[in-house]
Length: 186
Image 1 (spheres, rainbow, N blue to C red):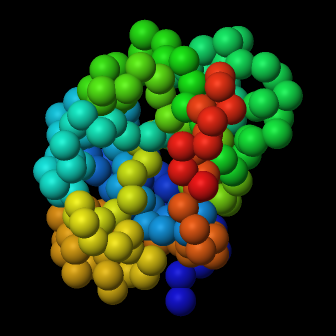
Image 2: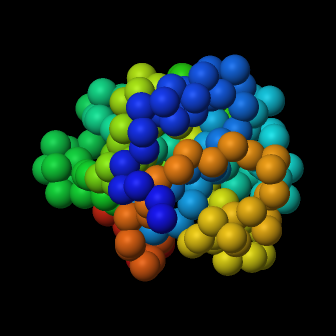
């Protein structure tokens, strides 16, 4: 059985791998995610190859705090009540800052970021010191991995796994355009 929260030594290893441009798998609110340092384009390309996902779709980021999200998104362009209403927990599409490279956003003008409430994901982002790429751990067209067996079937030993439990959420995070309020995925 996986621990609810990752052990310190596992967090240290995850951070070291991220800093060296590697891709890791880690638990999120409802599914296993694939993540990397969003500043490392080769690592993102590796994720896209693993998933067989086109770059034009872009990826979202998860953060432990608003300040981590603010490195990639212009939070001042959004009303405070919107941020308070949806974070933590909901993915918001926000106006992108320069650090949110086009290869993260894909064909989109904004950047999708979720301040997570999931303990293991939050600890990972805090330990890393910034937001990380967060995309479901599955090849395109297949269901997102909700257990380790499926994760291993999809990717084998090609990604290191941060051992901790999923959050138990059954549906993917809602995605809302923070400026217009339009629900992009419910």
